[in-house]
Structure formats: structure tokens, C-alpha cells
Length: 512
Image (tube, rainbow, N blue to C red):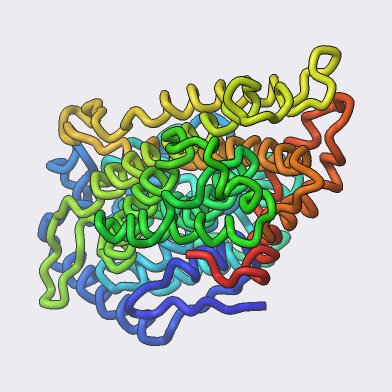
């Protein structure tokens, strides 16, 4: 079992994935404990001095000018968590909640939040005992960060609220802590606020999306190559010298991938010198690297944003080493919201151009002598006709989801929080776009495999042979219509998983 150590410099994207999607244990580096103890001593000094400091001796948001008596400051922190745990809707997936919790530990461990080490240790205990808070999907505006989602996490730390059961049921947190042998944490001044101010939910979802998008954009090159090969397309638009004259790095990478994927194919050899072959392929074939490559470059930008956020202090107020406690706006989710919306646009277009290639493969007037809808007996049989309908519907949904969330804002908290980021909504819908992209590439994978099977006895490329082998167990050979939904689900799993890509890379070397 792997171990993730939260360092004074934070954690890496790989650490987040190991905790969110795996069973990695979390430990705090001793230096982080020292940093938290030092910042806590500053807060304790402020409490003793009696001077007003936001979130320590005052209320929150629009109540920032309301002084709170010393004897009620612990109560203030508990009341904050209870009132802010006000989300509604279906629970967020376990991986999102675990990513969010680890990132909150990271934030506290940087030593700028003024909490006692035991608060961070309490979150670590929840992660290590697989106690996952029930976090509803609605509640965050990305304003002071992800207030409501983080409050639902913090409430479990107090022994209140709900947790996600093994079967997805909602269970009382107190019972879950008891079974795990964990005791609730009693908060002191500033600690409730430190548990909920920050961009951890947005960042967690963005990091998961970055990992998924990187894989899907490579798989988009694979499915594009299969479709181009099955349609007797040309490999010449993917020559490296044609992309060197327009030096977008992502475009060059996708072009190189597609060109390599098309080598070693008797299907491609069959028409390479055919004078009747089309001088130019359609845009959906010829411009595949320009679209997928632009998406790769968008992803590179988003990775930069996430990397900066991983080393950022996003709490409010922050405790500076010289003893000052300053109010900040670092919790505002605009950088993450903008990045997520940009990546959603890019991923939506990768799926849209894939659907156009599917449509060409199924259209007997454009598929270069493939049977209608890739059925050997079209008429009685419909082949993949309705699979393309499904793809078209998903493309339409992705276009709606590509509308940016981050340009929206609804003022809250008595106009104290008068401009919010909607970053939670942006990152949440990005994950939906990527899940939809998985389905679109699955339809293209199925269509490409069917097309290559119908080119027999010509043998396809190594990539084509690997795809036929991977999907053949579910799809079988072209023939009479079958119940298609299970075949499409199998194709989704092949696109999402590592096996097909690994099989192709074993033959061709690592894809970009």
C-alpha cells in the first residue's frame, strides 16, 4: 500500500490521485506539524490580546463587524460548520470527497491557517479509516472557496452530519467514527473557518479531470486513426513537416500519433497509389490533429493553473510568519473556474469531431464502399445507425455544458460576497463533459472496428488489430443486429481503461 506524505511544500497531482482513487495512506511530515504549531501560537496570542480579527473574534461574511465574546468563540466555530453544511442533492463521488479532504490537509499543513495540528490529523484519520463524508452536489459558489462542501466534511470531523456508506447509503457520522475508533474533534478559535475557506473541492475535481483528459485526448488520436484507416483516408496530412510549419506543440503530437498509428496497414497500402483516391479528405479526418492538438495545448495551460494552485495558500484570513493575520481573497475560484470552462470547451470539440467521423463511416455515400450503417445486410438490419444518434445527442449535451459557468455570478451574504466564481459548477460540469467524451470515443471505436472488419481480407494496422481484439469479445463479427447497449458499454470501458493503449504502445512505442 502506498503512502502519501504531506510535505511543507504540499502534495503532487499523483498524490491526490493515489488518495482519491486508491487506498494510499496519508501521513504528515513532522515539519508540517511544526509549521501548524507555530501559526497556532500566533492565533492564541491574538485570542489572549482581545483585539478584533476576522474569523477569530468576529462573525463571518456580512457579520464580519460583529464582535464575539471570548467565552463564545469555540461555539462560534462549531456554529459556523453546522450552518454552512447546507448543501442539497445527490452525494458527490467518493473520489472527489477524498481529493478535497487531502487538499484541505495540504492547505492546513502549509502553516498559514492558525490551526492546531490535531485538526489536520483528524482529517488524515478520516482518510486513513476510509470514512468519507456525504457531500451534496449543490451548495458551493466558489465564493469563499467551497464553503458548503468543505463544511459537510468538517461536520463529520465533529462527529456530526453524514458519511457515505459502502453501498452508497447515507449513514450517521457519529456511528462511523465509533466503528473506526475515532473521537470527534472540538474546535478552537479560527479552526472552523480554516476548515472551510479554500478551493479544495474545485482543485480536486480539476486534478481528476486533468488526469482523465490526458488519457482521453490520446485515445482520441487512436479512435481517429481507426476511423481514418477504415474510411481509406490518407496518411499524408499527418506528415511531420506539415505540422512543423504551424508549430503548435499539441498539434504536432497528435499528428505524430495518428501517422504512427496508420503504419503497417494493408488497408492503407491498398489505396496509397490509387489515382481515384480523394485528393483531400474531409475536415473531420484531415484536421483531427488541429482539433485534438488544440485540446492538448488547452490541457497544458490547465495543468499550469492547477500546479500553481497546489502550492497556494487559499485560506482566509491567513497567519503570516511575522504575526500579522490578514484578510485575503485567495479563496476566489476564478483561476480554476476559467481553466475548467476552457478545458470543457476543448473536450467538447474533441468529441464533436469524433461524431462527424462516425457519421461519415455510416453513410454509404461517403464511406468509400463500406455498407450502409456498417451492416452487411442493411435494410433488415440497422447496424450502428442509432449508435450515431446517441453520439449526436451527447454532442448536443456537451455543447450546452461547454457554456462557461465562470461568467455567471449571484451576489450572496448581504452583498459582502458580491462576486462569486462558480468554480465548483465549472469543474463539476467538466467531469460530465469528459464522461460524455468517453462515450463519444467509444462509439467511434466501435464504428472504426466495424469498418476495419468489413475491409477484410485486408489486414489493418497493429493499432487496428489491437482494437479488434479488445472489442471483438463484446462486438463479435459484422452480422445481424445484436443488443447494442452492452457492446457500447464494453467500448466505453476499453476507452476509459489502460489495456488497449498499452497493447498499441507495446507494438508502436509510447504515444505522445
